[in-house]
Image 1 (cartoon, rainbow, N blue to C red):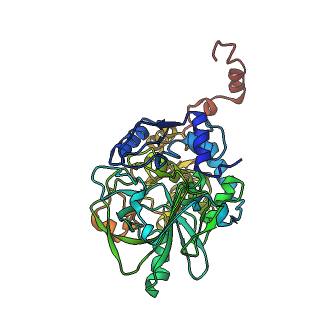
Image 2: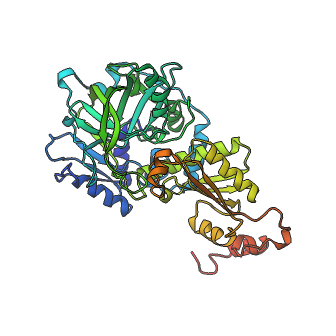
Image 3: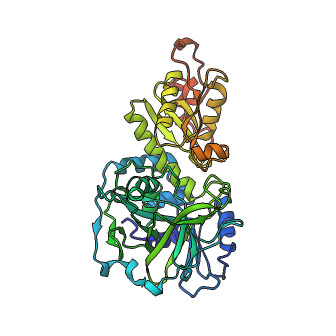
Amino acid sequence: MPFQDHRDFIETLKKTGDLIEVTKEVDWDLEAGAISRRMYEIGGPSIWFKKVKDYPEGFSLYNGSLGTWRRVAISLELPPETPVREIYRTYEERLEKPIDPVIVEKTKAPCKENILLSDQLDLYRFPAPMIHEGDGGRYIGTWDLVVTKDPETGWTNWGMYRFMVHNKRWLAGWPQPTSQLAHQMKKYYLPRNQPMPLALVIGADPIAHMVATAPFRLGEDEAKFAGALRKKPIELVKCETCDLFVPAHSEIVIEGEIPTDQIVPDGPFGEYPGYRSGTMAEGVGFRVKAITYRNNPILTMIALGVPIDDSSIAASLTAGIAMKRGLRHRGIPVVDVFVPPEGVTHLIYISVKKGGAQITKEVLDYFTARRVMVSKVIVLDEDVDIFDSGQVLHAFATKCHPGRGIVVEHYEGRANSLTPCYSPKERERLKGASVAFDATWPLEWPQEIVPIKASFKTIYSKEIQERVIQNWKSYGFK
């Protein structure tokens, strides 16, 4: 059965050895963040901080939901040791069968166990952590799910955006200008001078958060894809103060609106590329109108930084499959796409059935023409296992010609405002160079001059391969 909520997931992680419960009191001010960051960097388990300084028993912090491929596999109800390639395949297959969500009554929604309105509102009631030294404030929204709605079509969008506590009743957010939240704001709410309703969800089930990171197309409903990945409808419940629906089993839901005439300072923050995001800047203000939460609420967080962590792994999976679908739709003979977590979506590996300079150019054109913010692409022949970075590095070193094998799109592509290598001016303009490395054999080469790879599968006959495999144990090998 799919995980109904984060608590079910936590119980399973206990059994698989992928969770550590910390019962010693931990300070929300940097200590929890520092512990969590170090745990990512040694590839350790997720952490449940059961006792947080200055907060009553039952108000806890949890970091690292999907911080390893093991935990992603578990979230999809696959064996923990499932290879990354198989995780990708399962994710892609399940997306083909969207399942509509179901609406439940408020009395059946755990997130409605406590409801705060008016004078009761106080964001400091929850142990929002100061995650990194140098952050602009305490970030309550990191591993979250943000719900907004298109007022004309009714399309509901889920995204993952950071939100910092400004005071008891205000948050500061920073949705990237190219995000779907920003698209809805600029297209519908700002021209009408109309506040934008928003729900900030903390601690939904792990699949819901994964889906919130995914680059689905405008108009696609993430709740349906969450159902597809869970193989069961996700349960939603209506908010108290607006016409938005949120996962009913969430830990905390913060309802409110983004006024069109309010600017609130946000940041800096240690962001997903692994660097601090500049200085404090103008963010969107989020006026809180209601808070609902479960008894003994668990505040999910992510101590973002150098990969690998929840963000880089979730984005690897969701972005990789989205790019594969898009490239195939464009007619490019793609075999597989892998977004290595270490590349934090700035580097992509793509294998194709037919390579060459023209295909590489078409791949790069796809990325620069779309809303996809990728700056480096390596195109490889299908005999390279792109989920094996050693094979990719070997192909890149031996097959990418240092002259004709590099295709650069000069300052025409859409730049990511968080990409460290772009200058401040490039990040401000959202325009920057993109490059593709052609690590495929040129199509014009006759087959007889294409070098034969000296590997077990390619340089030996099938007869020899089968003989060696059949006799492996008799040779004395395991």
